Image (cartoon, rainbow, N blue to C red; front, side):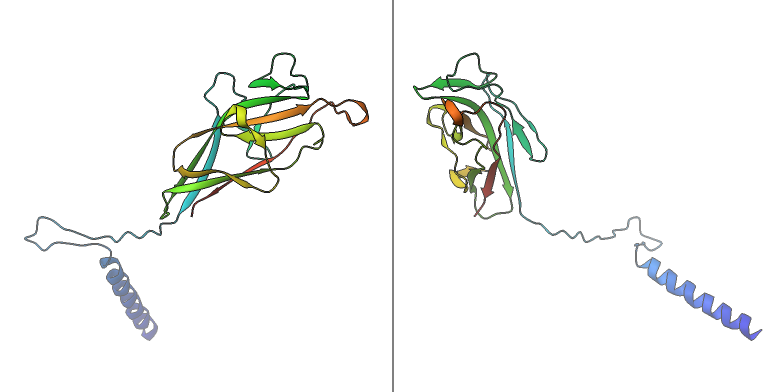
Length: 198
């Protein structure tokens, strides 16, 4: 009997404790009340965020940018040559006495939130082609002013606003090379874009 009494006392204590805890999670009105107003505190921890998106250019001749692996994006200029002869797969081609440069427009869109600055900078760097004697990667603000992309990232855009697409130009220069150092075949370079918000 003592065991049963102790058990009942323990159960009653547990029930009262549970009810007290439950009662604290809702609000009730008295018998003459027609409404009740519980409150809820909402907590968040806002962080800053940055994003840089590449997309196809607006021209009708742009080279397509698509998802890549293992890189985030990829672009293919297709067949190129040092004389610039034939119809480019995409983009445009211009020639000199010693090379041909294939160029396409593309868009880059910086997005950022939670910073005191309203503008950001974008830097570009790239690995060299396996055959740098024949191929040079170029980039610029206009098709006619593309310049060699350095290995160490260099700022190419200052004062970029969040959410505003920027039209840029990417190019590949193919030198006219013959003899033992001539190269024919596939090659690639990896470009790194760095968005920095002060």
